[in-house]
Image (cartoon, rainbow, N blue to C red):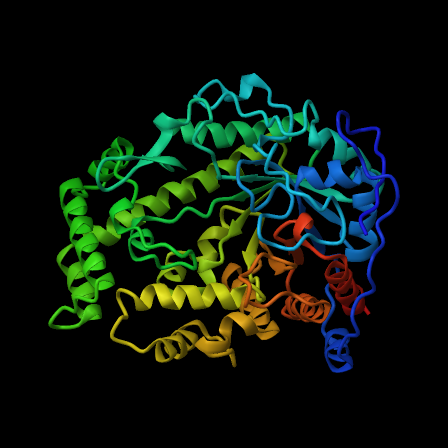
Length: 506
């Protein structure tokens, strides 16, 4: 049953008036509890964060939502979605998924738009065409101004989450988008080398840090380079070799400065597109799929070099955001979201050095979503099996990849989506990140609490959530980040995560 609280800080909306009824957490394994309690404790309090979008505070009230965060989840830091046009961090539950036991059990598709949920200040956006990004979803509500005082009153920190996720009708967007292999502009993904894109992100970060007494910024960007896009080498269910990006004028200019041939790079990606399309059609090369792929990389080293160019642009944005935040006040923190494909894909993993990322960040949120991870990992194996590794039976490919990734005893292909990934996966990935950054920045595992999955895939239970939360803490994480967004989470799962945090403290 959904109940309501009122909040005078949030105008022009109907608010929830009475406290939400919270389900009790499920019974927890005594053996796991004993292990967690026995683990070594850190001297400073861990950052226990939750990702939450504006609509949750609108629907449930600021005070009521923060009460739930603290009382059920043991949360001490709010990661408030402040800028995005996407539905992963903002909005109510997405279509086709069950509503949680709080908030409004109805779709917000009729009014969801996205954008900047704070109050933009024009002086910070003079060097970019992206000047009109104010979110209209909740009228004149400034979500940061509404939530920040209530969080401070409770001793909670607040980070503004900003995501590189756009819609095609944003004024000024079309000239900043990527250019694909065929010379076509994408609808809504921005070129990471475009100077106006850099100006927007640094302007937004500076605006938020100067205009509000927040604790920092968490930046999300899950756009991948042309090699992964060509091969579909992620958990997304698409292989778009003819739409690989980016081949715009800024990438061409950067290539010339590095002595990299645009013509050779484009020719290599055209050949790669042909390879992918032939593979999808089952047209096996005489030497096999993997040999043909490796031959392409040998003949066209520009393929890898062009992909690296994309990553350089993306990482430059990260570095500039970090610099902009620190320029406002050195004590502010800048953090980055490390996408889930980093767990599944050894090729992608090789391009993401934790040591290098630690030099650009105060904290890294690493995605270790174990429940939806089974479905996502299975999708990744199916994608790479469709092209480069088509000669390898999927089950054997999965076992081989498990060895490359140092995974433990996980389910096979037939049961992977339904089983999800284990708490041991969370533990191993957290330890890998900690070893990589060598204490130079904080590691916060993102804990899967109710992320959307397919009809036959694993849905998180309180016991699952407890185990994953305890595993991250046992691994030595500097904190945790409950993900993907509060409006997807069931309260019993959130309470189980909070119980694990409290139990681990002993």
